[in-house]
Length: 325
Length: 204
Image (cartoon, rainbow over all chains, first blue to last red; front, side, top):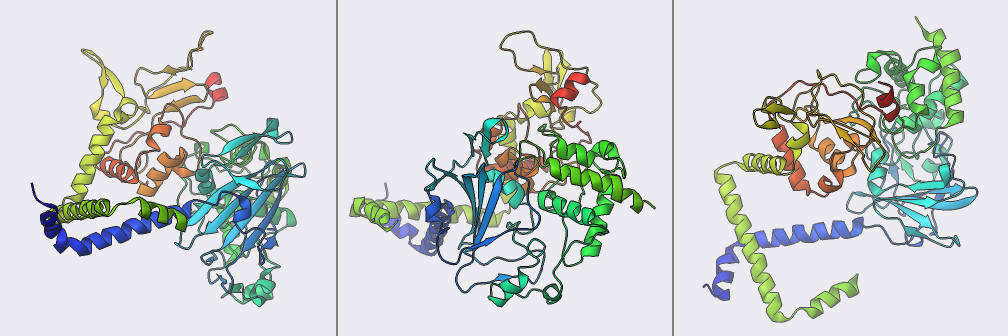
């Protein structure tokens, strides 16, 4: 049996390896520790100075919940907008989105760009008194809320957050050039947005469209579908519904082509939209369904967006037939 | 956080610290020896694939993803269709309606089609065929699917009886090994049908 001294002696030549292993171990532990979100919403910095409210022009349907959003950038740091469709957010960026039903806050979702480069996603459920909100379970939960569909409000799990935020070019979805066209000059003036292509300051970016209906329809699909359907993998269909401010005309053409050309895996190869025929268009069918195998988006809502669907149907009925060759 | 660290340090006697140091050194020594062996013979991938094969064979993947056929001694896995999922050519009648009672689901003789309150699910083709299997999936796609229980981590839910609650707890290393092994199994072109929704299942 070797003595402790002998073992230490045998292991001595490997001290650099030991150090590397320890550094790696400590690094992993530190990353794990910082990945765990604070236990209370009040500890996330939502009430700190410098937190800015914002409202994207195209919103995600959330069963009619009223939403408020805020962002906080670390002091003296800026968003880098060289690619105007994939802003790079500084480490330490935090965002919040509050969901209220019948005027009462139910949950506030939280995103943090951590110091180690990773992203934290969490949700906080408000207490009955409305004084603070507690970290929701990692797997999500359901809450009895009278004004929610069937009286049940669904709080997403942390994995659910990634279903939308993890598939986009940047995990921040609602704070972008397309979503905040009129805020860009102020963000640049305050030094919070750098390297934005100058043309976007002269002319606020907008979706290329032949009509206001079409612009709104394309915007609705950008906000509700484009984080997965942006044509760059991650989903099993070649469908592009995301708009790009870098080249609005080209991105509109891509979106129309992918909706009006034969589809691949689903819909028996037929296009997802039949111009003039919303009732037989798979796009409408999938957006209206809340059957788990058919519905789009696949999570995050329990009832369809009737107003949004009416808009999409108007676009298919009145605008699209004119585009046929 | 600081207090927590202090507490841990305070509870360790010097002799325990020495033992810990020995243990860490031994661990590192073992790692160094192992990595030297790998450097001499670059079989890291082979080791990973073998680990994946072991996990696939012991975690029940074949039970549903390799169709059963009737053999001389009863149902047996059809290894010519290994891990290729529900056979596309198999025409299924509607699932039978269950009588009153605590009965929940019905399964086809192949063990590859399952009917229940979710509709009818068909086991997936796990072979690396580009068009009908996992050929285009990245290791991230695979891990995201198992971790979240959603197709590619973001689509529809993975349906019963896939034991997502069990497999989602596998380590990254094990999921990566399973993925590595699945890349090596024989390609089978077999386009598994999309699942039937409950209403469609009843109407068919």
